[in-house]
Every structure is written in structure tokens, then in C-alpha cells.
Amino acid sequence: MVDRRSGVPAFRQVAADLREKITSGHLAPGEQLPSERDLVDTYGVSRPTVRDAVNLLRAEGLVTSEHGRGVFVRPPTTIRRLARSRLTREARERNRGAFLADAAAQGFTPSTSVKIRFEEAGERSAGYLAIEPGSEVTVRDRVMRADGLVVQLAVSRLPREFTRGTAIEQIDTGRGGTYARLAEAGRGPASFVEHVGARMPTPDEASLLQLADGVPVITVTRVAYREDGTPLEMNDMTLAADRYQLQYEWPAD
Image (cartoon, rainbow, N blue to C red; front, top):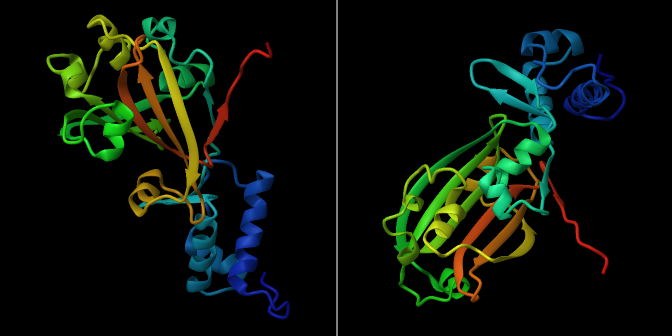
């Protein structure tokens, strides 16, 4: 029951007790919270107080609401983004490049939604791709999910001259993905550079990634280069910071 003499707002007391139940495992990941009516009876508070408590836990990323079903303990999802060998030719040939490699290593089920469009290159993308602003680029806009939970947004831009007439302009690029299709056309990537940063999400990003208030995003801009240094692709990735761990390895010599 809520202690009315403690000076701590009732909704924070309710939230604290539910938080302890979640962190201790008494309420397991994926388990549904008691109904609003049951929480009112359990804590001896009003419905608005219960709603404020649940909203606080939602803002902390501990619970998620499903329309028409209820409120559930949010399963912890930590994806290790394995830098080593994720973009090798061998990984592509095994159809385990990048996100698929992370899924295979960690046992989650990956899924991706893709939208294709064409646009004129802006100053930023033109700079990364070493083309003139206004040049036509192919855009592959993807929403990536792990076990159904959106964890990453990725927008690739490639000069249209490299993609015209290839499966890169289709939803399904085929086994090995974009880089395999570039290699088939004699434009296989030889090296990659990644620029990593962090910032607060835009409202659209926060909505798509279902981020709790105050959770930042990790940003990665990867540029793929041919052997001669020609940029092939610029890929802007936005990762939920509370679900990703970046892992890098390199030799000491």
C-alpha cells in the first residue's frame, strides 16, 4: 500500500514497487502487468495515479503498451554489432553479411522492411559519394527488426549509374545483398569507412524505434569504396542506443 505520510508522490511509490518487481524478475520479460483495476485495488490509489506510474515506467523503457491487450514488461534486447568480418566476401557468400551476421551470432530472428526511391544528391551525400550535387542516386530505406522489435533504421544511397538495371533497385536484392550485386557488375567493395556518433532522436525516429524519453541513438555513416577509391555507397544507420553494443576488434601489431 502507498505510504501517504512519506512525502513521495503516490504514483512514484507505485512505480518504484513495480520497478523492483521487474528488475528482481518477479515480473518476467514479456509478462503482462496486472490490470489497471487490479493495481488500483493493490495499491489503494486512483486510476490516474496508476496511469501516471505506468507512464513513468514506459518512459524508462521498462514496459510497453499493446493496444487492446495491455501493458507488458519489455524484454531486454542487446544486440552486439560485430565489426570483425561482418562485411567480408565470405560473409556475403554465406548470405550472412552485416545485420544477418549479427542475427546468426546472437540467435535473434531478423526482418527488414524496404522502400526504394530515387532522388537528387544533396550536398552531404554528394560529398561522401564524390559526385555532383543534383546527380541521381538510388535510395534504399530500411527498417530493421530483431524478433519483431525495431532496432535500426538504415538509409543507403548509391549513384544511380551503379544500380541501373540491377537487383539493387528491387526490394529483394538477392543472396549476398547490395554488395554482391555490385561485385557481379565489377564494382565490388574493397574497403569501408565508418563514422560513429550519437545524438538525440528526431520525433519520427523515436516513434519508429519506440524509444523511451531521454534515450539517445547511435549514428553510423558507412561509406563503401572500390579498390581505386571510388565511393560506391553511403549508408546512414540509426541504432537504438539502449539495444546496441558496438564491438570492435583489431590486432595489436
